[in-house]
Image: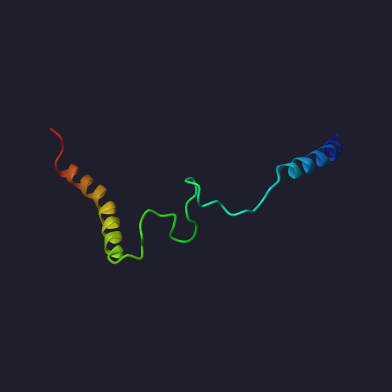
Length: 80
């Protein structure tokens, strides 16, 4: 039973794949829905700018220490 269903599905599958018409053309960049491709084009900041390292490490430090600082402050100053 399983072998017979495989033989029936095989030609149908081949037809479906042939009908899809896969292609590998480049994206049309004149369209408003396509953006440039390549390294560093898919992030909202430029890591090659001057001062990026300082901003990045400041962001990481504040983002990591702020939750712990708030927890410590709330431990010693409970709500009344």
